[in-house]
Image (tube, rainbow, N blue to C red):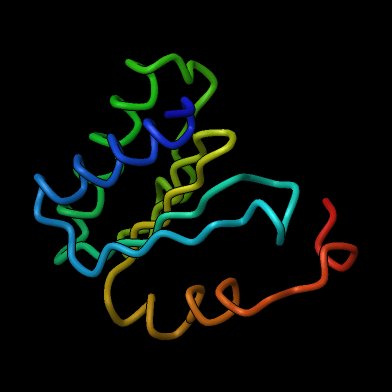
Length: 116
């Protein structure tokens, strides 16, 4: 199994073990050059969202992604963990519904429109 797929499974398992809700994985390989996968999950409170993001960051760093970081540190409703080829969004359920990232990224987008 390739390394990014292994890392994706590690992150999903970490989110699941730490009681994240509605974990969804979106394959971005043919949709964007910014990452290979996007994982979206929900937390139950600002403290839970913070804890989930820190757990994911720790797993990424322990698995060789030293440049990974958390964006949205001041927000209690959303965190993004940048794992270079793996992006993890952790939302409060209301914010997740508002932004609808699953809907946006699940649709087939012509590659030339999302080159970054």
